[in-house]
Amino acid sequence: DRLRFSGVWRFKELLPFAPDDKIVTVGEGQTLLQQAESVAQYVGMNAGQLYLQYEGMNPSGSFKDNGMCAAFTHAHMMGAKRAACASTGNTSASLAMYCAVSQLMKAVIFVGSGKIAYGKLSQALEYGALTVQIAGDFDDAMIRVKQVSDELGIYLVNSVNPFRLEGQKTIMFRVLEALQWEVPDWIVVPGGNLGNSSAFGKAFTELKELGLIDRIPRLAVINASGADTLYELYERRGVRWNGGNVDMDPIRAFYDEMDRDGAKADTIASAIEINRPVNLKKCLRALEACDGVVRQVSDQEILDAKAKVGAGGIGCEPASAASVAGAKMLRREGVIAPSDRVVCILTGHQLKDPTATVAYHTTDQAVFNDVLGSRGVQRASFANR
Ligand code: F0G
Image (cartoon, rainbow, N blue to C red; front, side, top):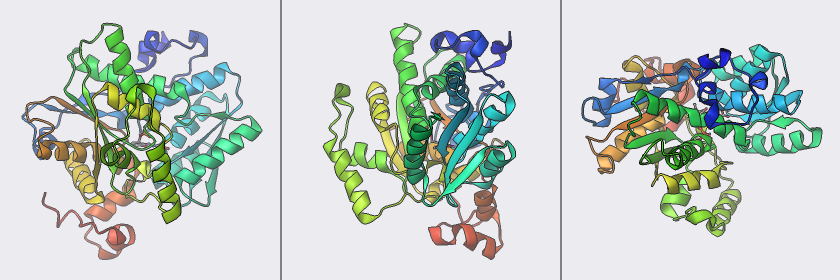
């Protein structure tokens, strides 16, 4: 049974929308919950209490395969011949991979100019996706791809697509499985377009309704400080899901302010360089269900945490390390206790963004300046945190 080897489809009863013969799989989701004591110490946890869910081990190197196999399967069910997305790189790499492996569809990809790490761009190009670089950033690309796919009748696989979130629920199923269904105290996840956090909230709500868990862990969503819309709205302006009655006024006001100031997202963690997260409302719902908190971490904190994860032998891309940096911040604040059981999601593989990593570790001043010089970041040799 080919579905047994998928970390997504072996839970198919919990995402029941596809007949078996339509399901597309490349063995995604065979990921493991890992421990690294050096990272636990860095975060300030008691021994054995910090776990790293290593989603970089997916076939295309990021957690996106969990959701993409589900959306792609749905596209196939609908008879789609082309599928499109806007991306900061990982969604597009994943879509391009499923198209190439299955030969069922052509991938059409919109990326912001200069906004995508080379590891990810190289995947899209080599897998043969039609890759369009637009003038602007991810938020602009998102608007364009919605228009174009609407006009041309192309299936859209961005995480506005609900089937993506169905697939991403399984990350939490595997975490619980690894913990023998003992619910952890905290799930800490980077926040970009807010698909993962939304999916996690849905997963826990459903598992509790089914009686498979008796309590729901707390959720911490971590923004980069240069792309902190969720933090601003949730923590500073008090926007809440409120049982479905989201007050849209402060959201509109903040978006208008960004427009007026010409504010653009800006962080070394290019995967989460997003100011207008499409799943904002679903994420607010997840934060309500999971008694959630939101924090923002600086590029320095992200790169320092990433180096610690790498030194522990696991390795991740910058955006992923926001989870570890966020856990450290919450531990320092006393929101997370040292004895809590904490799971940080490492969303993407270390090899996705070699440019940022090399710049951080090199002693070559020119290379450092080129990538990090304008970011007010200190490199590894000076950082001792
Ligand atoms: N980490 C990585 C490595 C990502 O690629 C992304 C999102 C996130 C975290 C944020 O996850 O959107 O569910 O909140 N990348 C998208 C992309 C936007 O286009 O690949 P989210």
